[in-house]
Image (cartoon, rainbow, N blue to C red; front, side):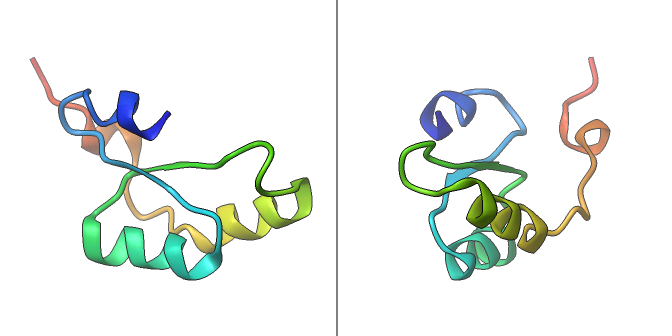
Length: 66
């Protein structure tokens, strides 16, 4: 999923399976979208990962204007 999303101009995605990866992706790689594997992380851990992903960038700011 992250590979497909990265083809869209202005949107940067990363696949993460732990909290360190989530924080690192956002801080170092300017990731705007988080993808998670359904069979790798469970529902409770998914909530933890999503809450660790900062919401500082809104979708409107990321998409290019035409």
